[in-house]
Image 1 (cartoon, rainbow, N blue to C red):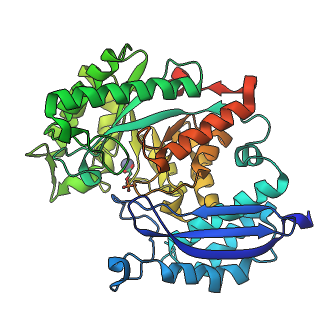
Image 2: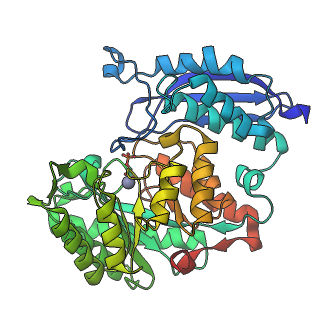
Length: 425
Ligand code: PGA
Ligand code: ZN
């Protein structure tokens, strides 16, 4: 097992999909195994997330990460060189120990996330198997259903839509690759529809590759997507379902939400969700209320009676304890899993285990600021989460994950299973 020993760790500053600097870490083991991790970055972050360290000052308009890079090279690397990458959970524990804070604020979750992913990647490479197989073993063969964000609003786009994400969920395909084909056909059909209806400026895209049309209301976005699904030759509610991420903390001020040009109470917003689930085949609503209003999540979940999942993101911040509590209290049906919300792979894994143990749904997710790192594709297959969020089928940092899942499906050949409708049973 000496081949798994970490021999070399090196961090450097690279760019994410928004042109912001981010941390990349490269790890080499004694056996020659190589792993690379690159930290993503959120735009609508939860208050209780692990925090990234940025340099401030004038370089990169304050967005530089040279300090975080130095933290890896100066503090993390000496502490983990010589440890076994095979025992990557111990390596993560060491990283947490070196940081010494509750929220990774000393080293930065950008430093720790990139290192953690590089270590587990190097372990898989040393073992000579793909990451999903290294983590999930031979029985890992279920490809997740993608929730593709094809209309962007909120903090991800320069339009007036208050809800952040409007997603399509292709469930009737028999393989992952076919599901992506369906999604692309809907995406392109939506593009034509938007261009015709709102003019050529409406097909510009937001941070996650979805269109950012000059719409004013959630209903208008959902209607446009239903038209696109049908014009593409599919049945909305049968072949393709819908999902939304409100990212409601972003539109919450002093007890009210700014929704589509109106100031609405939590109660009114709840009624709007119930109506939308009745009018449209919406099967999942993420962060419907502000992160400090779990009681509204709970009320919505009880009103929806399982017709749509209530998912936490800013509410749950990939924290195993928080997720465990909210699952037990009936606040959520599941949670978003973002490694940089907790800062290590192992902490995110713990959150996934808690969800599984408590009958909850884990939705492995990208961030709006992404990179060519494809770890989340492997993680979704390894832990059979059956659900993944990684943006529109456009922009390289988003298609990198879809392409990796297509590769995994091909690698598994006849053994691969597409989660499809079962993801919502
Ligand atoms: P973020 O948002 O990556 O910009 O924080 C994504 C999400 O809310 O799911
Ligand atoms: Zn979210």
